[in-house]
Picture 1: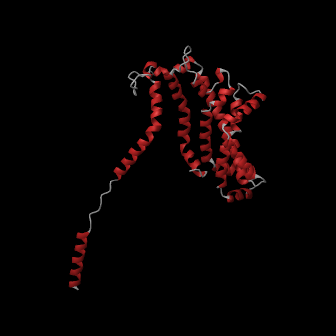
Picture 2: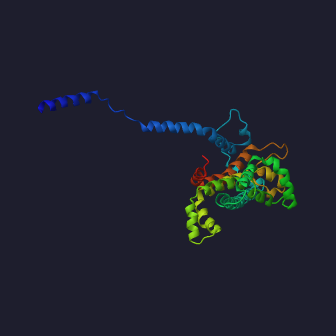
Picture 3: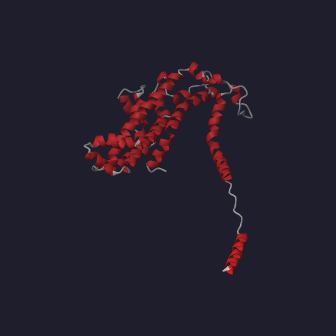
Length: 301
């Protein structure tokens, strides 16, 4: 018995001598490498925004200085006030906010109703109509601008904001919204609808009380996409709006030019552009989590 114990002790001691010391992991090094890599990837996206803000704080002469100056020695903060004193930029800014907000609400209403109908209601030709609807995404807006102008002119909407709101609510932004909402409603369990019918709800009651409350994430994603599309729209306001006070921000930005030479006043233009980015960033920061969940929940990775 003692011999066996002695032999086991010798073997255990030999095994312990043969064991390699554990490798010390450095999780902080891996995190540091990830941060450095992400910083390098973010530079091409962040630098244009930084250059825009830097240009907005320069004098007109400093804009063309060679080599370029990244940090102006004497920031011209009054450049951010110049758009409001030299043009009706505040009214144009509010026009964009109003048009984008109304368009977003309209697209959310139309897209959620149509998406639910395509996903949960069985009717003849449903798939064909949906494919036909999606084909509208393949047509560039430059192709449809002339017939759209004829339709808007027939309704008497030229030089009014209705020419921007109504076509957007029932146009391409709504088509994309119908697709997103349909994908979400297809994933909704049918047992929820059956439970609603047991409780006496009709089709619209099921949509309003069950389906729509569950669709907060895709609705937030659609709201951000629609707001951004309406806010950045340039072609339709350029064609339909003629009065300066009715312009939107994209049209107003290209109007900051020298009245004699017609050359853009770059520092003032960049200041106005910086101000125009603020509403979009606010909308995104408020609903960024729902935006990511909405895109993932509709099957678009």
